[in-house]
Image 1 (tube, one colour):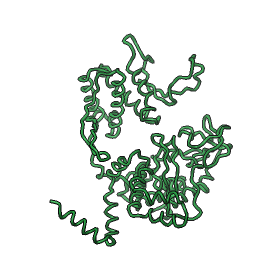
Image 2 (cartoon, helix red, strand yellow; image 1 turned 120 degrees about the horizontal axis):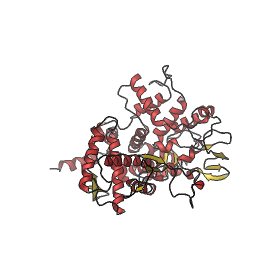
Image 3 (spheres, one colour; image 1 turned 90 degrees about the vertical axis):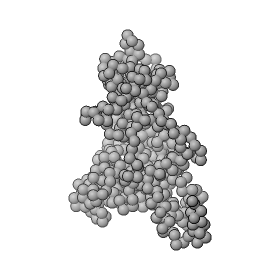
Image 4 (cartoon, helix red, strand yellow; image 1 turned 90 degrees about the horizontal axis):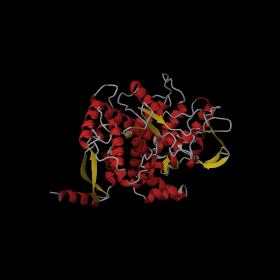
Length: 474
């Protein structure tokens, strides 16, 4: 069974009355004989392809998600055919097939075995497919069994379901989930080709240390997801304040590049933004070149908000990640913030971060964990929460208000609850999501440290009241 990724290029020569209603890069499953139906009627691939086309409007707007879901469906259909079962068979047959499928993918041949996270993705994709098929009247049974429980959400009990095909995971606190301040600093030094002391590491053989260190500080200082910071344009970098400030600088996250395509504004600290500007002014300037992609989008008259793209004025926020990769200046060279040789865009941050973490572990610190872009996001969340709990940003906001600097953000910092601030910065739809997110990290350390630092300043009456509360517990 083949997986083809749709492109409408040249559709005018296909003899159709209009352009096909299929999104670009949408995966299409095709049987080896290139047929979608036979004497028995439509094949299973037709149903899967219809479901895949609903993904952009059902919570999976990313082409990467479409690809993962299509591959999961392909593997499932292949397994069913191996056992001569139909995709919409009876529940008894589907449950039995799921059992053999799980055994094969979790403990079968090495070339087919999946990690637990990949299995979770398979279950999620197939569960969504069968839910869609039931709603469309195509399926009468599903292979999954749901356990129903209750959970407290916003002060009320709600029923929640759990797919029993998903694996039980170890408690989140048993693993390193984020970088504390010393490890975050060590990571940025490693990206920049420096040793733990911040001096040049003579064994470093990497390239573009200024770019790598600046982007590492950007992620740790802003909490952007990989998809978000990878496709940032150099023109979207906020201006650097004239003087260093303790109040963070707002940074707008492009709508079409954000998860769920939700616009939000995060922030970045002054030192991290200064590192980004230093990279733009020095190393990035030296990396500019005549590179142009296939079907380039040439930009002229570019500024902070947008530019003239192929002769038409457009805002940066209206451009999707795939379009951003095609943006070039009048003389060539990508407009992405991070560049490689000859003005090519650099996008493989996951590999770079993992290799840097491995080098740090081998050279300097054996306890250093694996680091990917999302672990940097976790680190931002914890570092920000720590400063919010300690009152660091509140004190900075009070000073900013007194001097008339950054008045809008200062008022926000003074009036808002720390969890609400963190919710907005991370782009969560609900503060409940933020609470669950934080529960999986070591937030107790932050509150404990804040308490220990301020214990001597606490009103004795408050301590007495708390003691009374606990002395009355039976």
